[in-house]
Image: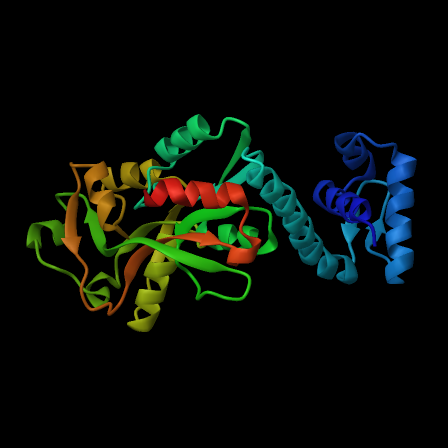
Length: 291
């Protein structure tokens, strides 16, 4: 099995189109097709279902994709490790982050990294913590700053950054604000909630806390951006359970402690592959972060 066959396979899987993948790889479409056929012959199974409009992965193709991505990531790390030994850090730093993550100034960190390692290309992806964990696990990201949503595994480890309690935010005229006391999930059961998409770390923590308390809640207003959530609260359209540091983003809102949720902590971590698979660029970024 040749590396170029895996590279071609991953490109077609990502683009779901032979012509677009060939253009991106700067190879002929006939050459790309021949490469995929050679891989299918070696594995003795079709990897794609081909139509006139697009191609989709077969079950065997889906099984191969994750492994192929990890292999290519390890090969890239090997090249970068050799360059690092020679005294120059080159290659790519593929970083993921959830929005408004606590414990790290992502922009400032990347600026410092660029000043120190100008030959490294930085790629940044913003997404929910669940998706970021999958991207690091698959080798598509070198590391990610996210909320802890799962235990460490053979393919994914976490470095703790910070933790904080969850807090209830509401309009100052809301009945909860006028009471001014800590609230429990039971006391919030009948409220209309503003919250993030289910893949976001704060949403996952809140969902788990309310499920553990046996309280059903209604997320009527679902957003994918922090300031949109705060705007909706500012109009008294609902309440939100958010990480404690969100309270400082909008002083006009009232923040109330959340009690009765056990260990419902917002814990931010750096997600990385195992040490032997961590790229030199990711190690260099973590060194800056820990300095």
